[in-house]
Length: 419
Ligand code: FES
Ligand SMILES: [Fe+2]
Image (cartoon, rainbow, N blue to C red; front, side, top):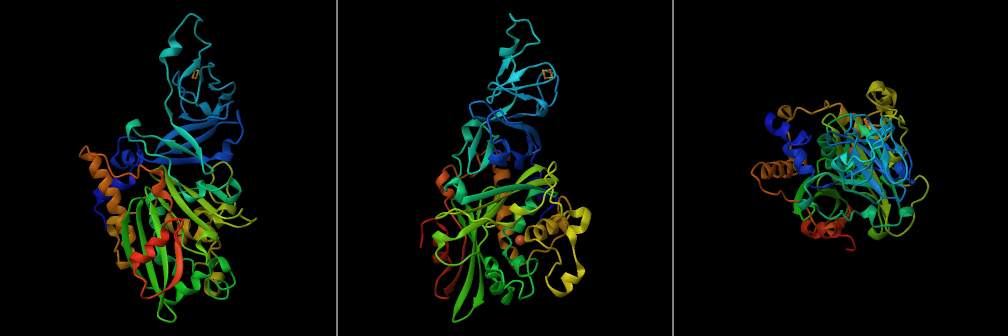
């Protein structure tokens, strides 16, 4: 449970709010690189952290993320012409480069220096790991780009996607770090589960539905482990890294950790009542196959809004007969099961009315970190932010291990390169 005040604090992300200022200390995924793949390709609308922005790639291939609204008379630059190293407003022709400088002002006399005095808001932007990232915080607090797994492999070894989710971003993360729900929400009655090797872990997680949860704070956020009883004096361990401010890697797969395909999500606030679910899958040692990677990548979306076609307007396609006979929810794709249930909690979940149990320890740890970040800022202190990109070189673990292996020992396997 959270007080109404704390719930308000962690869910509001506009400029000047404590959580908004905290999140602005991190690089934010804003859109996919492929959405502005070519130099001078059409600009794309981006709404993140309650700010309406425009992303574009200029003639040289540099990316820019600037204010949606032209500083002249506030026309949207979505309609702009992307030409000769700048985005030109179609209302009166003012033109801006990726740094936000006004480089042409044809509506003013040639001798005027007005153009040198006008700037448009522009954020540092980087093309990294299949995403265009924006940094929207104070220059002196800028961390290195996070060296997340999918950014450290060749393009052919990863898959990325994004889509809109109609709830506050905190609900998304709370689902991402809640290992307990996989035994229920994503439970397909056998043989549905057994037939799908990608979900092999699920049959183990279904045997023991009340795992023990342990959380350990790390230099990227925390890792939490859930162990379930398995055969021959062993546990089935699932370890999920939570990378600040909102990235997770889903535990799964089997065999050599260096050869597995990993997937995860990050939830970026669009406004306070909707968020972008970014999905990433990668394999360190080989290109991904057709159809491999997280299911969210293949979901059918409404092209303009980027909502999943299966959404709250059609109750996510719930099929009560399938629910009776085949799966726990009767909702088809795992990713729709997740977003559907997260949206069902209301756009901003009322956390004053919840009852948290032992299985919610990661959720509690995450909220503590957020609240601490907010409070530090309110007291004028810089909050904890991983400044080194290398802090993000982690992955998930899903393995059966002898009961003698301690949680501490299992967490060492989260580091990339560990056996
Ligand atoms: S509103 Fe953009 S140039 Fe006038
Ligand atoms: Fe899930």
